[in-house]
Image 1 (cartoon, rainbow, N blue to C red):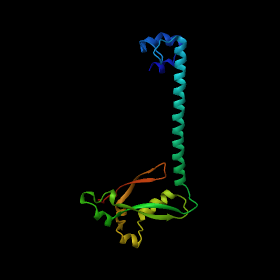
Image 2 (cartoon, helix red, strand yellow; image 1 turned 60 degrees about the vertical axis):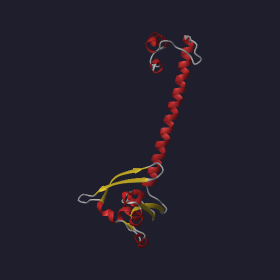
Image 3 (cartoon, helix red, strand yellow; image 1 turned 30 degrees about the vertical axis):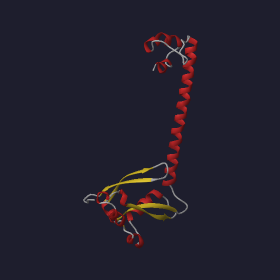
Image 4 (cartoon, rainbow, N blue to C red; image 1 turned 90 degrees about the horizontal axis):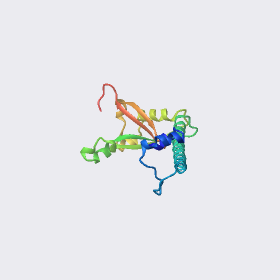
Length: 176
């Protein structure tokens, strides 16, 4: 902790208050340090800390940039058709599970849809999900979209890898 405070003082003041923080000052090899050695060690330590802080700051900026790019890419217009994966309840697969595991996330399976050129891929993906719109084949395979009338979107979270997580809650007057 002394090293952090030392940065706030000039060398003379630091030497006067040093005894409040440490009983004796030693270098890495264990020998006593002179004032010049101490100052050099402290400067080297601060240089190392500053470098590490700069590296962490740059990493945080990179993560923020990647997240922003992913959000921008998904929330803006697309010029080409885009394949999306939508998850629906599958009654056939649900019945194969032990009773204690039924009606759980394990019963949600994906179907694929292709969105045409769009102005807002997030809005259009959510709209498509909530419309249901299962094919006859998917219905025969046990998929159902009956739940979409009894839920409301409560939260969204766009991950840096492009995955869009949606949280739903029961619609007023319904029970799930």
